[in-house]
Length: 478
Length: 93
Image (cartoon, rainbow over all chains, first blue to last red):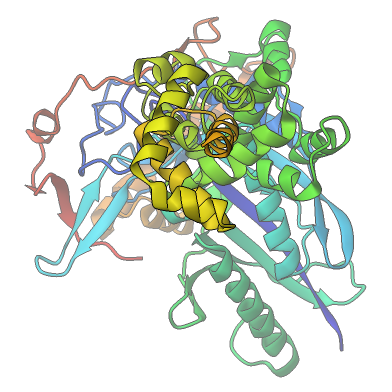
């Protein structure tokens, strides 16, 4: 018998905020243990949570990027469970009126295009981290991540293979990074995924027994886990190997197996109830319109515009839309200098190489696009050499400078003072009669030697074309 | 509220009740239930569900980070702490 896999995903994304969802502690990743904690996120009695407005902004932004309806009155609820990484013994989340419902995401796989429906997106707080200490046989708790804002994107069970799941996750990541909702870094846990999977005979409309694998944090692990779980379900159905029960399972990526967590909690067990400490959030037309107006074009819309209106090649356009930061700097530079191809080249080769050298991702590009446009113009107008322009660019990565002012202050403006160039040329010719004779005897290379000496004397600050012409003229007049 | 429902609550709340405590707890829940049932006498058909006592909305703040407490202050009352962590009995699911 042929089978089909039915998969729904719950994707957790950490939001790009400065502070936590209900208190002002920093939400930054990578601090020392319990550096970012206060009585509110430590769940001490009597503390009142206050909603971070930016969390609502980003929740709405995510929903609009994924074609969702926005609930104009959205509320928070308590989800009860006991575990030491959750100090209040409940998680504040959204159950009754989540911020977004009914969206869609278009994915593309080898089988063509497909629409994946989004059931809802809700805002919630993250839990802390536990470190199990074998030496003392205790658990050590770090609350830095407690109350870091998350959105959970819940899909309908519309996915049917590992390939579709990866395409869906990559599309989510692209859209959310483009809208600056999150940096979506799997390796830092800012994107994580629960996989709900069941198997049924092909064509059947009855869902099979569903298992859930929680907290998957890499695309390769997700792919392997889906393949393993699908085979395990089919073995259980066909040959009665192992038991198939509705449960949460843990994926061990090193052993390549999933294990039962014997945790059969259902929604009822969480005893959701409205949080009386957090007042409803009402999104009026002004707020809604402001977020709608702030949405970026989808990456493919930008790509088409770059190619059709600005004449970029498909390769260049593809490189730019890898990152919203690249697009922003490119557009600002182009607006300033009007040279699309040059602006694209500066980003794709020069800026990318500085970022690589600094071990930074493309999203971390933080230079002034207008200044880059000014720099491109200085090169085009032959006021600054390409080599010196790279030095100026390196400065632009350190601080916001005016390229022309910087070039002037550091003697990087190309000299058009032919008198000064002629004086240097004259000196060089007198000091190297052998090269002059060689050139006159037909050795082209000898000219390069003389040219190099002049350039060195002039410290690189002269128009190479002008120098070459003056040099040949002076030799011929010898 | 019967034995089985109480067992479930025990598990969810990570508690272990003795036989006497179970009996006392069941009595307590029965009493609570009788009191709650008396509320059925009130007709609430036309009344909207009320979650919040105060008629307020949008109690929100700007996204600004600050750190008014130190780790040491917060861990002063902790029964056990170690190297900046809160230390609790080992718990593995």
